[in-house]
Length: 432
Image (cartoon, rainbow, N blue to C red; front, side, top):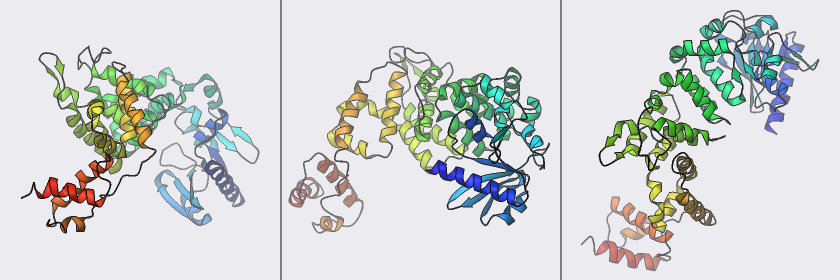
């Protein structure tokens, strides 16, 4: 339904622009998807109307990149990106759709679609390259990447997401320009990385990031995993980088938290490497959580995403002890909003090393049973009731309630009378 709503709005905007005497077409990725018989996720519009003219024509507009000619047209809560035809300079506008198509990044993104004549305008050989499954710069790659450094990373993203190979000259230019990717904004780099790692082939994307030298610039913490040996008994696959890459190979269509938890779960190993009786990485989970937090902050991730990923990295070794945990401990684990991410990270981690899934299967079974009664109990006694038993207001009330909930989860406390009896035995006697 959302997709139909977007398509309907796109066609409405195009018709409105044409009624006002402007040219307007569907452009870029949505046209590529149409040629590939895929349903577009978004619809972009290219027009010869300038940003100021768009503001006059449409009631609600948001200038998201007016200096580059991009405006959001908003209607009924749906936003549509409308961009003025590009000129020969990235900050110049044009009145010509041929010039616009010629100044886009890759041939597969240089297609326009006329919804009135129901025809594709292909001035750059985009359809031929889609058929060849090829990523190729429209103009000279050095000019293309010189205009916008983010295009270096976009080449990798389109290659991994679409499973297309990169044209030889384009690939050579990606490698040459890779040190300059840091000139792109961190937010834009973050968005491309998310699309790579949450797609169908994150391993292919990671492999290209590695081979082009981009990983060393964007994610030096992952580059640092190379050559860090691991104990063969637990990691017969090889060093930490090899393990991480194998783990990414098992990842497909993940959400952002899982993708980056998988990528960063072992970033603490280089700093904690010790070789005594055998290779050990004591505390690498804690150290890794701190590094993960630094990486995600650098890339301008949201606080909530940082929290989730750092928590998963911090706890990915603790889950190994699940079969020895008390029922209450397991239930508290299940109540975490990160648990399903932690569980899938554990499965992928095992599959990329020793392959033993006993803990995963145990937790899966327990979690399935728990989900039939998923509501976390409130403490049987509230704070006022506990204070009425002789306690002063303060941190001790929270401690009592936390332990009380654990016993409730185990089924050992079911009533207020039982709770008061436990408090008297466990806390009043203890605190005298």
